[in-house]
Image: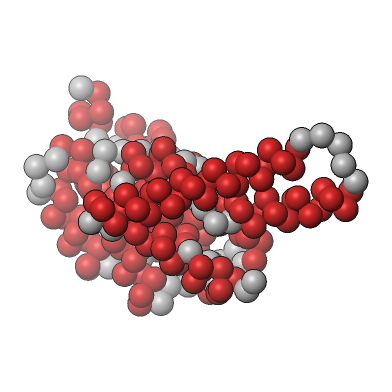
Length: 219
């Protein structure tokens, strides 16, 4: 099956980010079923002793099952060179994976948690060329990350913000600064400060000591 056909087969996964609870519940159940099938295939792969030929058959069966759910659907990272994720056929699945974590973090954590995959995808998305559609999606992801309580690897989104910096992104960050959420105010201020200081590395030390953030972080 081609990469494009595989993405089309997982079109149902768009329901994972649906605002309709019923549609999202149906997608979550289908995803959970796919995860159970992948886990069963993994058990078959490692049970007993069997000829190498049979092992190859079971390995392919496991890989196919795992690729029908997250994070296994993203395993073919080797299909794109660094800096070229923008042309990767599975890019829609990568963006869906990140948007799912951004919009429904608890469901993502329960059903598909993979902090390493999140980190790699964000970094590669920051490093690739951005057409108008991809840039718009990345601006959305930065805003979503800024407006919610901080989660593991969210600091990586600064890379994306620097890569797609522009008036539209800064306008959204300023609106987040004026929101009623203290977390959003702090995070948006930090990202804007780093956009204004491109020479400053986005390290844990900088996050803990930057001028606008220090008072809030020390409380």
